[in-house]
Image (cartoon, rainbow, N blue to C red):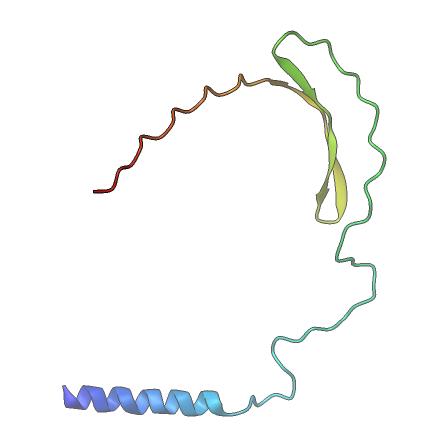
Length: 101
């Protein structure tokens, strides 16, 4: 058991010593380089949405208009759709009173 612990201590000492040395290369591994090229941090504004024909819908349905979605390097149009209106949730019962002893 003592042999095993002394070997583990020797290996951990070597590891800590190696990690405390400065890096051998002259550059840092995680380096931020500002780039003023065509890449942007925020996407450009989307184009105008195309005109959509809203289909006739019945009771309990609602039209959700389409929208542009940014996909990596450009916009993709997501068309509008009909969704069913959910009825309101019933009210929750009040919690039971708590009486400490």
